[in-house]
Amino acid sequence: MPILGRKDKTPLGIYIHVPFCRSKCQYCDFYSLTTKDDRLIDRFVDAICAHIRETGPLAPGYRVDTVYFGGGTPSYFGADGMATILTAARRAFDVASDAEITFEANPDSISDKLLRRLRGEGFNRVSLGVQNDNDELLRRLGRPHNYAQVLTAVQRIRRAGYRNLSLDLMYGLPGQTLAAWQETLTHVLNLAPEHMSCYALKVEPGTPLYDYKDLCNIPNDDVQADMYLSAVNILKEHGYRQYEISNFARKGMVSKHNLKYWMGGEYLGFGPDASSDFAGKRFKVVRDLHAYIDGIKRHGPVLEEVQEIPIRERAGEYLITRLRTTVGIEREEYEKQYLLPFDPLEEALFRCRDHALAAKTSEGRWRLTPEGFLVSNSIISDLLLIQDQSAPLARRR
Image 1 (cartoon, rainbow, N blue to C red):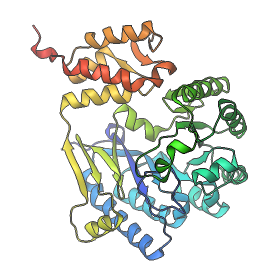
Image 2 (image 1 turned 90 degrees about the vertical axis):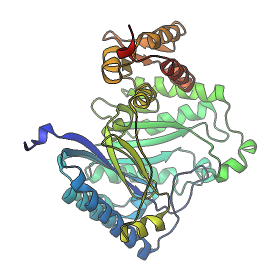
Image 3 (image 1 turned 120 degrees about the vertical axis):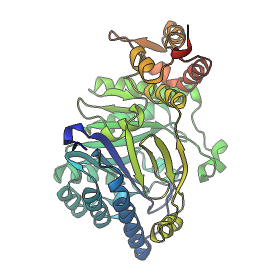
Image 4 (image 1 turned 180 degrees about the horizontal axis):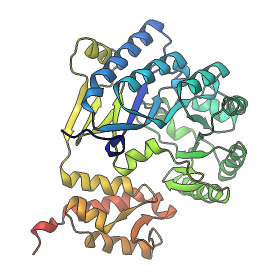
């Protein structure tokens, strides 16, 4: 059997879900626990490291080029646990020396000690949850920080030597106006991050916010559309290129890890509720920390929803994920991979272009415009219906 050189290996992303938070935000539906039980945390670290060790031998033909610690709040979880888990990943997998290694952080749980330790361990990217610059609005959202802590956190991150900083913002917040959102963008851009993520508030069932959503003056769809388009324009004016519906970056500073999700790359998730797409299969870890720990300890099942994805479903995923990006979709790429005709899709995309919702690049790729991104769910649903009605190319005469 030939030995694969590093250049021949398939790129792989690793996602680590850290399910610990200081407190639960009013809008959050991610799996997390508000605990600082050191014994439980130690058991989690032991379990996830064991899970990583068991999985590493299954990926000999892969090279890890991104590692992402999300949550939860990894910065609240602490540097020791993250360093231990990253070490386990390096021992079990072929992790590239120039891999993008990210951790999410809240401003209130950033310290010089944590930043120096993680920088020394090889972490080179920070994703900081800012959300807004108005302290009263942050309080109403249940955020554990204020804007002064954001300013201090950014100073500390830069002083520790990080040159890849992403800031997260939210719009469509209770009582927020278009003018206030634009002012927030201006303030945050003064911090000169390399990357910006701007997400619309989603009011999910089961969250505290859902119970009083009709009473808190959430901006309507038209106002949120204006907020989104203003963000696209303001960020463009400041040198940030939009590369995905909600994400913007300076040249060369896109999130390589998140691009794996949108561009069909492979990734492995570890920790409760983490998802994977690996070796043609998609699967998810059980959404229960104690079940995860016990399952790993007893060598029992910890995965659920394991499924091998048929090629037609992969074709649908191609439309769903690629049309979230400014890369878009392309005829030869689509027909070669999925053996389905592109013509019916292109006819629909021409109609979208007539309404300024889609554009065709000089390279022949179709992408949605910012206005198209606003109604992307509707556009993609129409394209999926067309795809479902298309006969495979191999059967056409």
